[in-house]
Amino acid sequence: MDNISLKDAKTAGLRETLGKLGWTRTLIIAGPEVDTNFGLAARNIPMVNVLPNAGLNVYDILRADKLVLTKAAVEAIEATYADYTPSRREAEAAKAAKPAAKTKKEAA
Image (cartoon, rainbow, N blue to C red; front, top):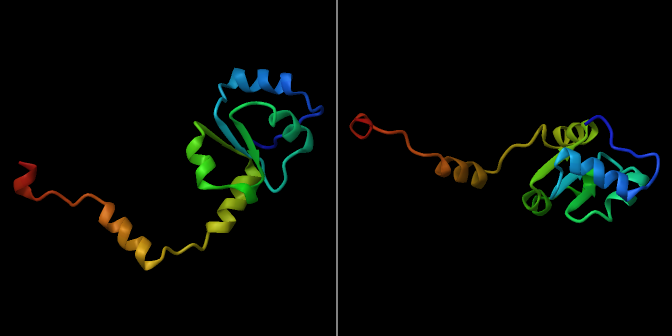
């Protein structure tokens, strides 16, 4: 999404819009700051969480059925992890998690 904002903090209108989109159990990462009206309207809708970039966390992502990111949120996440290098422990764990290649005998 380009931007998430509302003219008025009306929960009923936002609930209807999110319902049409099928956004139940949704986590919305709104960018550096959450639009005040959008945040006020969304806080009264069960199972819809709206967070700024700084609030992004694994727990909320795993609880949600849908994850919605604004362009600003994606850019901030990319900038944060662009130079990320996994630790030796993470690299070893990733290598161990990959299935071993089958030998010719196993494939036959």
